[in-house]
Length: 88
Ligand SMILES: [Zn+2]
Image (spheres, protein in one colour):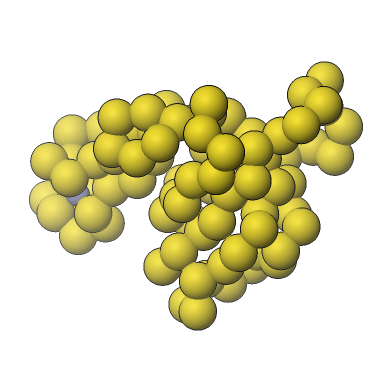
């Protein structure tokens, strides 16, 4: 899913309000378990998925971990992208 950043947490770096961002089906992991330490975040016992762990693409706004957000192109076929917030 893709949207526009409306708010940013105090410890988030590299993102600005108004940036377009996208989140894939893997919407977060703990970053410190044995799986995460070797890059196998899919098997993290604390992995998150949009629509399951937090609201998904139909929500008016969502909060996502910044490490799972990716820059999104400025052009899109979506006329009203959801607003999102990154928190760390
Ligand atoms: Zn983990």
